[in-house]
Length: 519
Image (tube, rainbow, N blue to C red; front, side):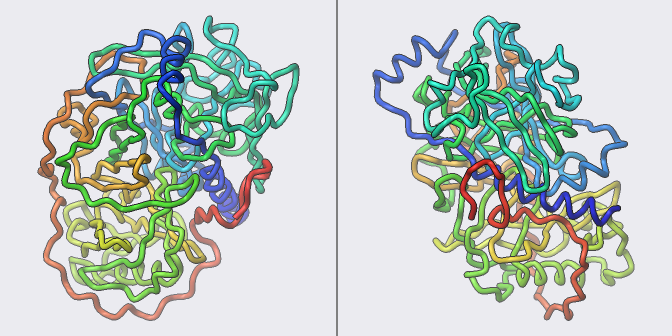
């Protein structure tokens, strides 16, 4: 039944959020270690001035749209495309993905890019139960250590740095497994091979990296379009991330940025923050997740009156599709959306979404952009604009819905939808995050540079280069400045919360049963 399916997906979403806590340590060593990395781990190395990873839309089979929609709220955004881009979609897929080339000769895989997890994994040729994905659609298209002249299996005696121990040791191969409370799981063994990154000059460099070679998939990992996943968080349960390997090999800065629009975007790895960049920085805490201190939400300049305690442990997670708020904050935002429509009577345009807690209107983008502007307020005094372009999404043609949902407990998640129309900089050296307004579609197209200087693209499959970064100036975006605020009326009495709702991503509720920590 649909009720059972919704409950199942709620657990899937929580499990994926917990997978977001399994990440890799950064902190690379001294000059001799870097020199050794150049000798043994990098092929055709050229340090670029600037490069991107493109993000673009991945088309899904329409027959699977409903199932993907059920999963969208806690799936990872990923990067894909050629050279420097990311691809994805909020409704159909719920993630962005990257075209990543691995091995010698190169083989292309579409990997979900996730700031909330660390494991990189993709299907192995010997997989006994793997889905038909974008590139790894059949056994012959999956990763094979025998098909790549530079590939090796990771042995049990030499697990990746930071990994406490292999989960299994079959035929001497270092095994991994992640199981979820609802039954979804992945397992396989670790391998290492060249992962190809892009430079602005059009050259490609192969960096030796360890990643998971899956021999079994179930649940969403089996049914998703993307071939696999690659994480950018900071834990080290399964060894370094691909970005960590890049940093070790090139000594690039411990900084990356992600810029998302509705369907495309860009990713920059290892760029430098210019000294003259006018950015408002938000400190983050957390050993693995990017946890920020959100204290209030203002709508049309007025606080919603929820205790700052309710927002504790707010995470910035590109892999969570939408925003999740503690119950009182969610009700305030929802009720304002339901009672303050720019065309007058909200009920005159109200229409059904896909779930009981969907609040949607028949409207066009121009009218939706006239909804009240909000701001996210942080404890250090920084305010991040949070307009309708970030909290509303188009479910289908001219049907717009609120992209904010009930977390069902304290804590919040700032998801991929809320990161749109800004280049979000993750400065892991100084443990801080900035949201810098940008035209991410132009950045994807290569007509607008990153605010960072230098850097690499995750996808070395294509030699096309992005333009060098230029001095930052706000883009001519139609909703780059908020309209004059209008007063916030008292919210109507909250209606009974439906028993069936969008699955929240409460990573602190449940988690993978792989021996990792539980919060």
